[in-house]
Amino acid sequence: MRHFLNLSSAGADGVAAMLSEALDRKQARTGWPKGKADADRPLDGHVLAMVFEKSSTRTRASFDMAIRQLGGTSIVMDAGTTQLGRGETIADTARVLSRYVDAIMIRTDDPAKLDELAAHATVPVINGLTDRSHPCQIVADLLTVVEQGISLPGSKWAWLGDGNNVLHSIVEAAGLFQFSVAVGCPEGFDPDESFIREANARLANSNARVTIERDPVRAAADADIVVTDTWVSMGQQDSGKKIAAMTPYQVNAELMAHAKPRATFLHCLPAHRGEEATDDILDGKQSAIWEEAENRLHAQKAILLWCFGLIGHDGTN
Ligand code: CP
Ligand code: NVA
Image (tube, rainbow, N blue to C red):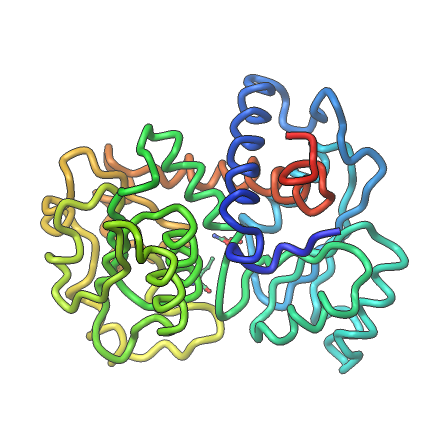
């Protein structure tokens, strides 16, 4: 049994197995109705519980469809309407859900809650986003980049905006897959330094590096991937001061022109159009945001299969 709590613990081999499995399964069902299960139904009879302490569109719908396509079913639980919302502990919730279901995905605020769930569950636990990381999103992002024909090692990713949970997982991926990330963010909104330190330690023998750039143009310069996210994440206070600090880091045509001419634009969504990115970028020729959103589904399937040991080191792929 494996928990998927972050990219580093899955390791480069584990994530690479997910990418390869996702590409194969995506290709194998081209043109099929979305509710039809994959031919091999590898998780036949399995049930995934999804616990949401925060809102979601993509994570919720893609995991629901992922388990169905693998032959299983799901239970969706909004924390506010469960006993979690009335103070039942995460540990007790983990013990109980483990008696009913075969895997648990949780979206929560404090990463300590995710760890507590994993410590007390006897089934795989998946991190569906915390305030600190969003690894499922980055498996989909890596898949999208690979599909664009970009080789991950040696590529340059430019992050523009807030040093948030999504960026933390991108930085983890950089260490695993040996690519550079230039983080363009204003002072006071840096990512957690421990992610950068750990990634740069993994990159020590390569030319790739994770760096902080206060100048958005320097961050975007010659990038293969330009990526951003909302300036105000779920649970954060929407402050005019933060928006003002972020404004120079908006991804617009002028900034995008500094990236490579064929650079790909990514955004995990939901977008705040006209804030972190302009409409012409989100809807433009270089944008792969809808492929990226679709790839959440294909990535979740691979993540589930990895959790059950069906792919990766001791799996069959
Ligand atoms: N990108 C992402 O996780 O979207 P949701 O918040 O809609 O799940
Ligand atoms: N950084 C965003 C990601 C949403 C998918 C948030 O945490 O709200």
